[in-house]
Length: 150
Image (cartoon, rainbow, N blue to C red; front, side, top):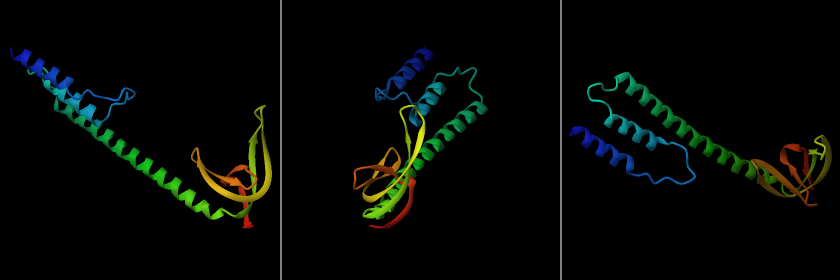
């Protein structure tokens, strides 16, 4: 009789909060804790899990939590870095630049093109700072060789 009660409780626990986004297949911290709780509830009382197994699982959980925190910090850093780059390159608006741009041809080969122009605006696209020149050409800010007054 005790087994049926344990089974019902574990089924109730496993059915709680199963609302996930349909596109998310990634297990998070909450999912890991739910798995651990279900495992603890459903273990054989005559042959319980060893302490070292719990410690190993908690260490895994701790690692998961630290990786999640690190990922959040890196995302924040990249966002800040991108915003900072855009602000820094904003000073180039109205300045004349000489640049070298690498262009990929249709046959897959690359060619270096040099040119100059006056910067009209600064864009952030695909994690790159792009400069729009007055003639409408977009160049990568990394290719700028000389900056002078217009």
